Length: 140
Image (tube, rainbow, N blue to C red; front, side):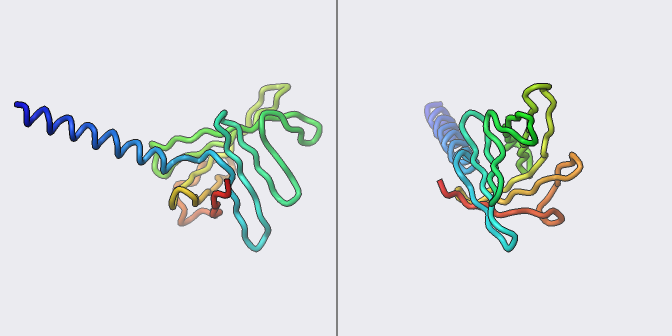
């Protein structure tokens, strides 16, 4: 009986430890950069759920930014239990509360590199083979 309890405790500890390792693989908080022939772009994912998108000529995002005379916020949500991992970028117009969601998928190649594919027409892509995607590398 003691052996059974010890085996169960070791198994539970290993399962708990491996789950914590997997969680660290999905740590998106930080600044990520993508660069290709058309230019470069950045995503900054913050602990509070807000995000910032930067391109060569624009900055969108955070808790309060202005675009075409209107104020918005930009937040992200990750569903890591889904395969591929789902990432929703939600733009909220602050005055009306209207929301626009960019459904995306992401894949962690390693802790410092992700693939990100954004859906079109409100539809989430379901793979990286038939979708355009960008490779982002962690810089912070």
